[in-house]
Amino acid sequence: MARKKVSVVGSGFVGSTLGHILICKELADVVLVDIESLKSKTKGKALDMAESTPVHGSSVKVIGGSDYSDTINSDVVVITAGIPRRPGMTREDLISTNADITKKVTEEIVSRSPDSILIYVTNPLDAIVYLGHKISGFPRNRVIGQAGVLDTARYRYFVAEALGVSVRDVQAMVLGGHGDDMVPLTRHTSIGGVPMDQLLDKDIIDGIVERTRKGGGEIVGLLEDGSAYYAPAASVAEMVESILKDQKRVLPVTALLQGEYGLENMFIGVPTVLGENGLERVIEVDLDDSEKSMFDKSVESVRFTLETLDKMGY
Ligand code: APR
Image (cartoon, rainbow, N blue to C red; front, side, top):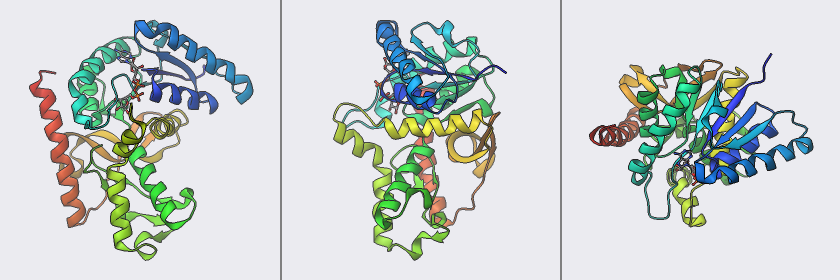
């Protein structure tokens, strides 16, 4: 049986960190692709990673460069190509530059890997997944975006930190768009099976929700010259693993809704089942009035970004 193949487009901070996680976990052969002027650097990063495989005890191959023919017949393609945020920027400020890049990259990829599953990471995420779906012409199960796993990871980390417990025991889910009005589902958060509101006061929970929503911005502010990459890369790796191993993990991803949550043709973060076919199912969570109104607000923000792309002629 041939080994699985994952191509990562954009070998910057997120892409190269992801590549390294994938090879450490021996999940697939990895191809890193970046622009022509970074060909040598990308080749160098891949060679450096390849030289780490004996230490990791990993038998996968990794190559890098700027030639899309290396990506042919990939099982999964992760697209991180684009520019990241700088302090003071919103994710939406990236839209015109990153939409152009996404269009170009998607065309290069789909002609060579027509059966692949595409995972977008580039921001503004929900709009970029919408564009990727449109350009690729792939069915919805093969075009998804990474945001919810990251937002949920941040939220789980803050909850665990507040309680002084292991992050492993915090079960949670963040829904909605990858923006400052995402919806951490506090009512459905539990710690070792115990509902969170039995363990933490409301004002602490409110603070955690607020910090989660601004989590990306907090890192941008600290780094000063780029955005987060360790947690985003780890989050994509979890999605890739669930797909390649057909684990059927329940993970929040940015997906095309076709009637679920009462929405049509909307790309937003919802809980899904990820397996060998990519997005295998969208799980609908019952939302109470306050959760519903937060979700609706997030939907409106995403709708505005999608309409912006339409107006720009994509
Ligand atoms: N084809 C291939 N790669 C490209 C292209 C292109 N047309 N255009 C840009 N890239 C590459 C850049 O050369 C760079 O190496 O994408 C890479 C992006 O890497 P970084 O600048 O380090 O950005 P990173 O932190 O990895 O974030 C990438 O993910 O989280 C989001 O908001 C973030 O949109 C950003 C993306």
